[in-house]
Length: 296
View 1 (spheres, rainbow, N blue to C red):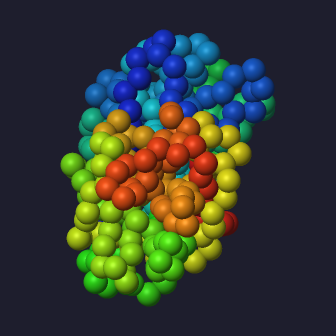
View 2 (cartoon, rainbow, N blue to C red):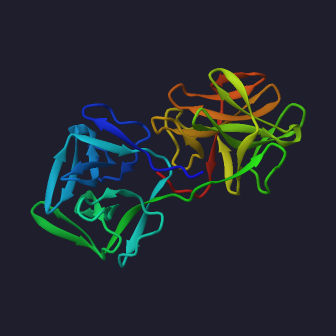
View 3 (cartoon, helix red, strand yellow):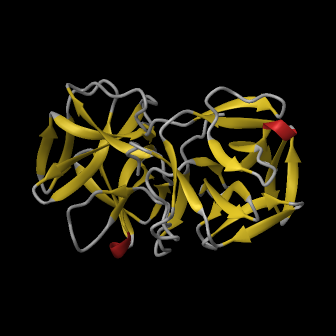
């Protein structure tokens, strides 16, 4: 199941979400974010500047100030260098033009002490912006791309895919694996015990049995203690997204001889796990991250 890009609406002066994708501005006094907004029927990449309560878009040789915009919800993105106008296949589109429906991809480049964000088309050789009454062009720039996605294989509780990611063991000594399952329209982290032919998620304070699941497979995964419990690491593994676009990150905790994978709640600064018929909230946990991933 593919996890699509999520653009969340934001009308100034509401605060930015902790999950918003940052634009690496070199200005020390303010942080800017990747956004998009409508202008003359076009859906354009935008630089959101929370300290000013607005977003900036560049179109038709002008900079336009916008107060209604959307921000891109992370993690799972990275900036990829581009040269000779060849865009990566995993480039992120902010939208399209009104005139011909051509996709507009999100690009950035340095100019003096600023990072500027704008749109490029698939057949465009150079990235250009009209900034401070000058046309600026770059042969080499960066394009926003989706980071290498995790591989989740559909299966049932009687089959364990090769290369499944181990979460640990239960107090009977049986292996527990990282999985996810659909529940009420949301793909949520799950614990999978193939030797017991069972998988569970936590929902509304209950442990819910699942028979159709997807199992995480691959290498270079590791468990680590969170540095800050209210921040999402750039290389965190997430099983899906909540209805508001927030990532549902995978974690694990140790409880009474059991290694239990579950859902990280960054707002509550805890992990929610299925255990003995209940969905428990526990403050001590580890995050599942992918080594070598360079997301945002």
